[in-house]
Amino acid sequence: MSDLPFLWTARQNTVPPEELGLGSSSSSSRPGASQAAPVAAQPSPPPSSTSGTRDPLAAAAAAASATTAARAASKTAAPLNTSTPPAKDASTPSQSSPAPQRDAAPSSSTPASASASASASSLASSPTLLTATTPIAELRAPSSWQGDLVVATRLHFAEATKEDVDVKVLGGFLRCALAIADTVVIAVGASPGTVDKIRALVNAAQTSARQQHQGGKQVHVLPVSPWGKFVPALNALTSFAANHGFKYICFQSLEVDVPPDVIRALVAQLQLGDTLVAGAAFPNDHLFSSGWHVLNGRTSPWNTLAVWAVGKLALTGFSLVAEGLPHEGISAGVEEVSTISILQRIMPRQAKAKLLLHRALLRADTWRTDFQGDEARRDWHRKKMQSKIDRPAAQLDALGIDPGIVQHISLEP
Image (cartoon, rainbow, N blue to C red):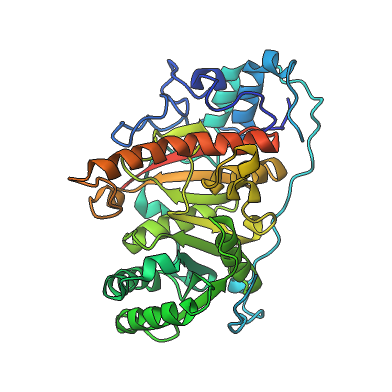
């Protein structure tokens, strides 16, 4: 059976989940027992505990290949660091980032003949597959990894026009970030006069934040030019993390306020060794349903709050296709989908993508998108959510590849 998980010919908007072995089934142990739905949907029961050795990515891919063979016959998939903070001590084992192990290139000539149900069964029995609902206590990372994690965010000058507001927002972000990591890095637009102003805002904000933490915490300001739309700043932050020996990078938006347990749960997923990224599911905006799903902009982790394995992400960085190709009619953004899909083709057994639902994220003040009393903003947000499916679909078409897959996991408090 082929282990080519991502040479799928069906796009995420055209193939029903049941054809991919991800839809409804009479077996309650089958992952993804229902089509992706808003967060309020109940998670499916835990998968079977029977033994098995197949990797979930390869097994889910085989299910897709078995049911899309007819389509495959008619379509073939095409194959800054501007800051100079002191480097981390390379002699510290916990801060080294070993090169990820890549899989040998599989042969595309191997036929996919097993049934989708058999593949789904082996996926459910995989020893690395977490149950649909997993106690948080089992997913907390040990405290020794704090030096391996850098928390990163982006701050453009347009967001710093009201100093009183920004100092408060930055202070809240830094208190959250420094509670979970020893190092924070903030990418800023490097246009004339803005870096000093933003650095002053950061210094004012971190003064109060540092009072709540022990010494040894570091906050770096990383100028980025050109700023672009999305990708240049993200890749500058990724380069910072790789060059200074961090194993994990947590991208977190300034407006996201979460307790440390949420980020600990994300890091714990990466410590399993086979995971590229683990992100937080946001109520009402993510289409969440426990199990395996085809990747799109509403099922994927977002850099709003997501932890990535630096050694794997640094192999490609975030794809420039997500910066947009305006002359081709391709819009920018939702960079997570193209990047995950590319890396899952390169290293299918080592690049799992996971979306975690944590009860702390159900708080109304975690990420405000209700825009009460502002119908125009609410309408804008609805259109933005729809574009999170359309934009990456066009980007994947331009790359000539099909989407990867993502596992949704619901955590008990």
